Image (tube, rainbow, N blue to C red):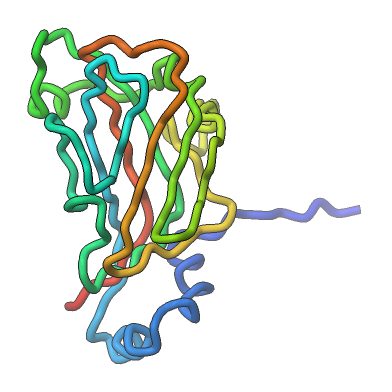
Length: 192
């Protein structure tokens, strides 16, 4: 008997397989090559300040947050295929650390307290994860980067949808100078 070789689909293949989920006008613009598809990440750096719950990508973000998705809303005319979520933490040696300090940190682990939290992620009215153990971000795979969870069923985030991501029930407070870095990885459409 011969072994069957299997492989994961690339992000571009996943996108192509899901194009039917896009609005007709976007599909047509892509066919006419007026729009393009490219790799993209939405990110957020959030300072925990010793909080018991950590909110990411929401309209009510606290001070000390750096993100490229304004007020937790997918930008107008963005259609983003979410293929994986990466969560890492770093504790700054700088007391009173700022976002600039946080960006310079090495994010390659997930703090044990955060790993035991419950993870919630809602997009518009759809709940993608509810009270899921954040241990899913504790990866030991050579195929994934540290803290990466690859979605078995990638999902589109549509233009103007609101995002709400939260880590709750930490059980203990993270050190005050701990930062959480979250990246939503995938492909997005944009006008050429």
